[in-house]
Image 1 (cartoon, rainbow, N blue to C red):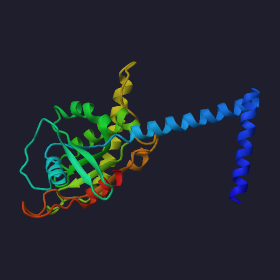
Image 2 (cartoon, rainbow, N blue to C red):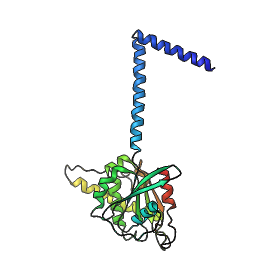
Image 3 (tube, rainbow, N blue to C red):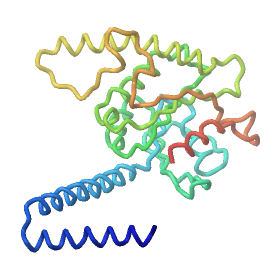
Length: 260
């Protein structure tokens, strides 16, 4: 069987050689077509690999949500007292099961600088972790929703479509809201924001903006409608019961393994 296949292959090779020597237009056309397909495949693989070079995971969220402690736990595997910072922190997170590493970037949550620093780093995002303080969520829902809306509606993030994890932090505390409740309330607030922001843009005559419409038109906002961006919600605790206890970041680390 193998010998027969080899014989057929050599036969076709000889036919191609004869066709090239005689400048047969049919043979030449087939060769050009095969060459174009091969070149297209090579270019596709090159661009795919280039896209995968985005190895940064951005830690975003409002001030005091616990981003920097989460960064410290993931990168340095320890507890440290943290303070509000106006500069990014960066470090490597090793995914041992895949023999890969991700660059974790903790970006400031202060409203004076967060949009500017996000602008400088958004192209690097392989994934985004949006950290929420579950214990103060209801009081700060407007700020939480506004910053998340800004992130999701950014044209670069929309085009690159990095997966997004909404980490509902501080679940070591009592009487905190669960991730399902937070998701539902955020969807309602985002729906209101979408109406007000769309109306504001329409009032600016001839304005060009860098934003994308979120979700489906003529339907209430839902995170599941943001495809191809996939948004997931998890509950976690970067703090732990006290400074000596282990954090509960299992769901966050499982997500990091998944996107690595």
